[in-house]
Amino acid sequence: MSCTPNAEIFYGGDLRDDIMLARMGLAPAESSIARRCKITHSHWLGWSLPHFSAARDSRDRPDVFPKHFPASIEQATATASTSPPAASEPIFNMYTPARATARLCQVLRHQQRHRFYSTETSFTGDHVRIVEVGPRDGLQNEKKSIPMNTKLELIHRLAKTGVTTIEAGSFVPEKWVPQMASTGDILSHLLKSPPKSSHPIAYNYLVPNVKGLQNLVKIMDAESASPESSTSNTSSKTTTEVSIFAAATDAFSKANTNCTVDESLERFRPVVSLAKEKNIRVRGYVSVALGCPYEGPDVSPHKVAEITATLLEMGADEVSVADTTGMGTAPRTLKLLQTLSSAGIANNDLALHFHDTYGQALVNTIVGLEHGIRIFDSSVGGLGGCPYSKGATGNISTEDLIHTVHSLGMRTGINLEEMARIGDWISSGLGRSNDSRVGKATLARLQG
Image (tube, rainbow, N blue to C red; front, side, top):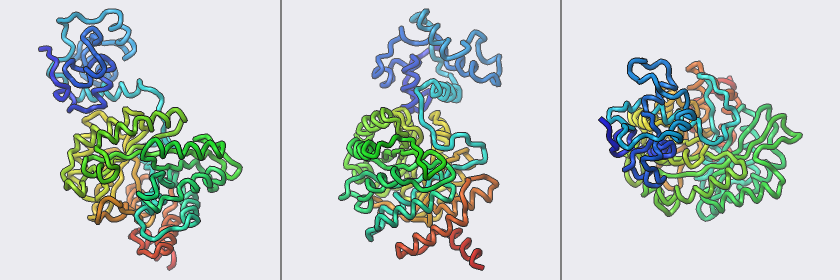
C-alpha cells in the first residue's frame, strides 16, 4: 500500500532527517521540508527505504527486501536521474520500518560535506573525552571579579593534566556576563603563548552571534593565527574552536538571548557559515534539555532532538545536550537519549553536560555511558552555575567524572591527582568550598 503521509509517521518529524530525505528526493510531498526544498514527484528516487537499508547492512534478512536494490547511494541517485519513477510507482510503504529509516538517515549523513572533528578523533569503545568547562562555564557565575591572571593560570594548569578540550571564555557582551569581559585578552594570550603540553589542545569560545565570532576572528587575524597552529612552546597543535548555544524552551531562550528558539537558530546560521568559511570547528549546545527553570522539568525530548538535528544540519560538528538546571533523572535521561537515537542522531555527534543540583549528575552520566555516549562536559572542583537559572549549582566535577569513568575500566587520558590539586587551588582562590568529593578524598589520601 503506497502513500505519502506526513513525515512524522516514518521518523517522528525529525527536522534533520526531513532535510536529508528531501535532498535525496525521499521526503513525502506533503511534508513542510519537502515544500521548502521544492521536491516534486519527478525528483523522487525510485528506491524505497528498505532498499537502501539492505544495501548498507548485509546482516538484514535477504528475504525481507527485494534483491534489486542499488549498491550505493550514488548508484541510486544516478539511476533516479536517468529514469525517474512513474507517478503510480510506490515510493514509500506505510509500513516502512522506523529502524530502516533511521539507518538510511545515518548513511546519508556520511554523504554530507566535510565536518571538523575533535582533536582526538580515533576513539576506541573505552575512551571518554572530557571537555573541561571550568574557565568559562565554571567561572561565569562568580560574583567576585576574577583577575585575568588567575583565569590564565587555571588554563595553564589544566593544559598539563591530559585534557584535550578546554572552554577558555565567552564573547558575550560584558553587561550580560561581566566575568567574561577579559575573553579577548585571554584568546590573544593563548594564541601568542599557549600552555606547554605534550598533546593537542582545543580552546573553545562561546559566541552568541555573528558579532561575537567577528570579534574572535579579528583577534586571530591580528595575531596572524589560523584555527590550527603550532608554536615553539608546544610539540603539538593548538586549535581555536567556537560554541553556539540554543535552548530547548522559548521561555529560557527569551531570558537568555531575548529571542525565541526559532529566532536563535536563525541567528546562528550566519555564525556557522562564517566559522566554516574560516575553517573553525563549531560546537552546539542545547540548554535546559532535561528541565527548565521557567517551564518545569517536562521538556519535550522530541523538541530537543529537533533542535539538535537543526544544529547538526546547519554545520555544527557536535552538539552538547545540557541539563542546565540539574533536574534530569535517570529515566528521563534515558528517554531523551532514546529519542535522539530514534531521530537518527549518532552518538558520536553528541556530548552530555550535567549539573549536579539534585545530586543526579553521576547517575545520569552512567546512563549516558551505557547508551554509548563518549563525550562529557565537566568543571574542575565542580565550579559553575547558570546566571539565568536560579538555584542551579555547579557542573559535575571533573574529578568525580574521571574517577567514575576510570572505575568502570574506561580511559580519559587525564591525571586525576593533578586535577584534584587544581580543584583545591581554584576553590581556595575563589573563597569557596571544593565541591568535588573525589577531589577532596584524593587530596586527603595524597597528604597521608
